[in-house]
Structures are given as C-alpha cells and as structure tokens.
Image (cartoon, rainbow, N blue to C red; front, side, top):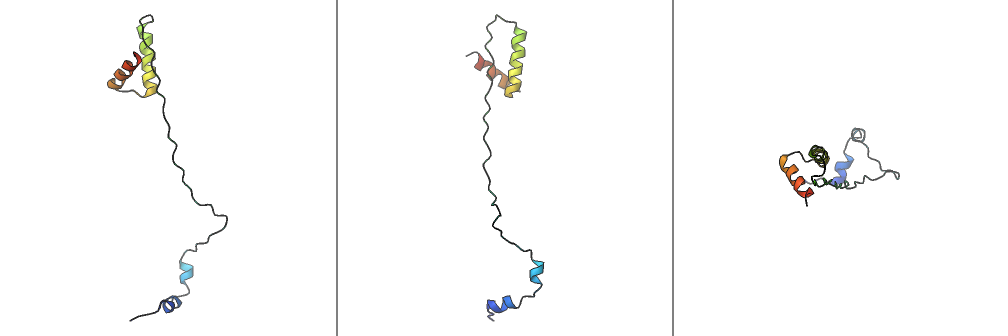
Length: 87
C-alpha cells in the first residue's frame, strides 16, 4: 500500500515538536575551527669536548647534566652523545 509523505507528516502528533530538541541557527554563531597542533623541535645541547686540561670529575658532572637535559637515559644514548662531543 502506497501512502503519500504529505499524509504521514500531517498525521504526526503535535507533541513531537516538544519532544525533539530544537535546533536554531543564529547569525552570531561561530563555526568550530580546528588548528593543527604546533610542532616543537628540541635543540639538543652538545657536551663540550674533554681535552684533559680540566678535572675529569667536573667534566663528568657537566656531561651528566647535558644527558639529563637531552633526555639521554640509557648507556647507549650516553655513549652516542659522548661520541658526538669528541668530533
């Protein structure tokens, strides 16, 4: 049986408008705009080269501070950092 849409819409109860949330658009509504997250590049600190003229303990303390700043926590990271500093 075919029922025209006009008769279905007109047969809807009058309380449907009060049950459904009303959506109104205003001219002052601001559209939601997303911006991409900023990309942050961290500049690694280079440890200074140890030339033997200063105390080794002082150099080691300096190197450990640089490792902490750069996030070098494993022995492999520290080895690579120490290798870069001697170049």
